[in-house]
Image 1: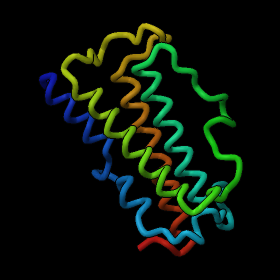
Image 2: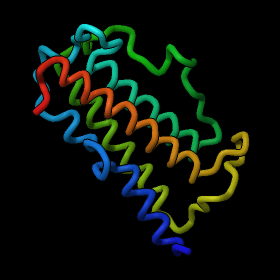
Image 3: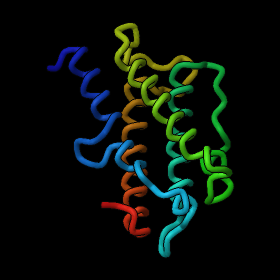
Length: 158
């Protein structure tokens, strides 16, 4: 059976991605600003919508895991931006930076020996930090794949 440190490292590797699919940095890099708000034919979401959904959901999972007073957004509307386009030229970079910051914090929470990965989160409904980390990794992998597909449909993936 893996030791605690090994389990934590496996979770961090899973969260950071890149083993079985594109990681976050690769999925968002070098996308032209003029394509960020475009919904290609056959796709439900633009790259901006997917990026923001990734950011909001990961932030919500992180905050739920560490803050008993956290209030989640209304589901599902609160997890998606209102418009397919970023509100301004800086919004994309700001969202990318916030996602990375929250990913770093989630990995730090998982890596902290003081975090009992198996203990029920007191303000939850049976969730554990382990479950929330796995949920985040699973959710991110799904939507990163969606982002790659949308970029392919836009002709913006190599």
